Image 1: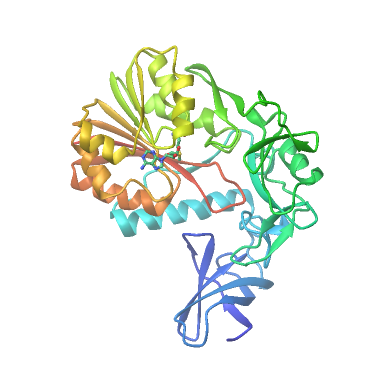
Image 2: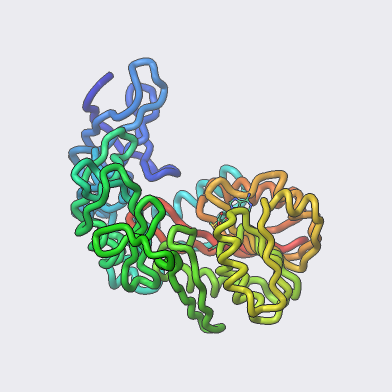
Length: 399
Ligand SMILES: C[S@@+](CC[C@H](N)C(=O)[O-])C[C@H]1O[C@@H](n2cnc3c(N)ncnc32)[C@H](O)[C@@H]1O
């Protein structure tokens, strides 16, 4: 296997890399930009492999979109989670738009109709200090460490500039039992709380008090209103400090006049609570027991909210609910054919799809078209600066 290769870097591809060619094979190269010429270290692939992976380690001809990395630890050979830290912020959004456009063209055969907008405040923060949650593993010396991208090794964290300062400090300053899983959570970007192997941790030791708090308080404020939540510190909550506000505003403005709404993959009720507080009848479906418990608690004062702890597809197939509108926020893999067939059976005329993966979304756009759901609007938000991830909200209507 060639160790170092000279590459003319081509267009971006899904997954945080660009495409290049070397001696007839495709090379997915990270830490590069389209149009650059780089020396790259091959990280995966042998002489017989038709596809290689590589990290750009020297830039021979730089793109005008290149900036000095804001997080060198996430650079070539480093930890994962900051693969676009060498790209100017506006170019990161163009990168994600290119991936969305290509995914839609390839898998849905329709044009992606939107843009990629920044989250409020991200330009002023330089795309940093947005993560309210982060996890690490304690190394042998007790320091919070992160896995190397596609490698076996781990490296002690020296900085975590994409996290809010409280999360970075909690992880960097703490010392934890070797091998333990450390989660830092700063609700609303404020004070940080720690969980070590899922248990509360305070003042440098396990907080063994029977009433040691496990839940954190979050609130969401949009032009349509303000809502309060409590969520398990280890449970799912949108990770960008602005994401809950941005997404709730989008969902509320897109469901239209629908009286009966199904909120599928509902988590702790981020959308259920505002939708039900507007007087709509909302059925909130979530498979994780802890998140479903949180949703029940968050919606307890809302008589028009029904909380269901179930697998989405199984619930739809067995209960056969009907609805005016469906809100769908599936995990990265998307909803898939059988679930979307079951969504079709709800007779909903409108669907609001919140997606964190462009390819999975594009595949589901194609499946939905087969059920008569036409994509009428989509808008993406850069809720994961310095990474290749992007969040998209799409509205479909039954033709
Ligand atoms: C991307 S999160 C969205 C949660 C919520 N809408 C929010 O924004 O806070 C996806 C949620 O789907 C849940 N989930 C994953 N697979 C599921 C399934 N098959 N049925 C129901 N819920 C599922 C996860 O536990 C997670 O809470």
